[in-house]
Amino acid sequence: MTIEMNKPSFGVLDDVKVIYSAVEIAAPTAAEIMAEWGADVTWIENTGTGDSMRDTTWVKEMERRNMRSLSMNPFSDEGKEILLRLVEQADIFIESSKGPVYARKGITDEMLWERNPQLVIVHVSGFGQWGDPDRTNAAAYDSTVAAYAGITAQNGTPEQPMGIAPYSGDYFNSLMIISAALAALHKVGRTGQGESIDLAMYETLLRVGVYYMMDYLNAGVLYPRPGARHQNLCGIGQYRCKDGFIQLCVYGVPQNKYLLETIGLGELWGTDEYPEDTSALWLDGPKAQLIEQKLDEYLLTQSKYDVQKDFVAHRIAAQVVFEFDDILAEEHVKQRECFIEWENAAGRRVKGLNTFPKFANNPGGFWRPMPPLGYDTADLLSRAGFAPEDVERFRASGNVRFGGEAETASD
Image (cartoon, rainbow, N blue to C red; front, side, top):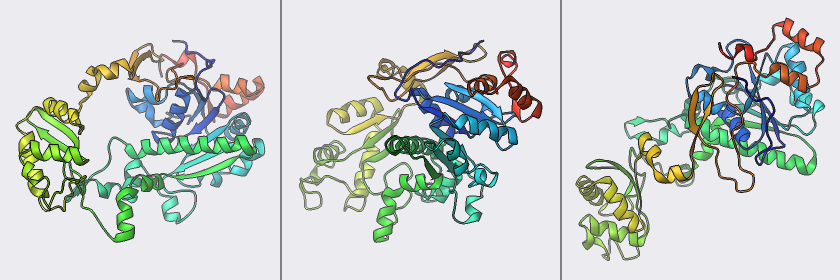
């Protein structure tokens, strides 16, 4: 299959060029989402097996679509020469590594800004570019930075902490990379001066987990891990019905009154313990254990869909816990076209998520599947203005890999 080489014009980032050098999820997904919004994205891969995401069967097709693959060693002489030429016309450069690897290997912010003073540089690492060397130089994945940032300790049961799956630490950081990069690009548009962003993944997760940390920082309050329920409120969490699970979030005066009446505790409403203006059913309340017990007992006699319909009608947030099949069968999901299909580089049909959010005037889109390793190397070098003899020099060095249509069937 021949892959389109010329990006069509679309999206809110149609005039933005992004280059990134990273593997797996956090930084690449940030670049891929920007590509869905119209950015022209170049993906730098190593010359061996390429990005480790290529080892997956299906998710790579989602997370690496709309990109151009350039295969090279960016720290070689040839790689540095190519990178410096490419950033001349780029708006954003994203790299993900252990701490200040790029600076140690001779690719400094100042070197990049000499070529492009307006470049936005995003350094993504587990623990940042500076600080305790034992931390900044440590290997990091989303699960380990979540453990470091206290997110893991806030999830699970009192007996067992639990991670936030699947790869939520990475995906939270993907969104932070996008927002930080575009915020910096906005400022560059005003000042003409580039920016360097030190994005430590654990700090993003500190921000995500700050809600209950604030109580600890200021009052020494430490809530127990809640398991499937809420840290400090009744009627919030995942509950078992007779035919499955439902997520409840009971909050508000009329909502609490209806809940108590429904589970057979209506006599509590309007008492000194639960006055008629009670907006929250706290776990440290006088009858909290009884409320949870009666709610459990009630739900076990009910169908999850009947509970959802009844509670939603009474302005209680309630949602059946969907499995994948439930999502795909949902009419609302179909009407909003949340899933699309496309052909991958081998001509095989792939189904994945559509572009989000829904931009009214400049919608995002899909324009090419994940390319084979190094598929765009020759094209990108040509676009960057390298002469044919330079291209041959790069090829002979072994530090640059050239893919293309001939490799599509085997890659």
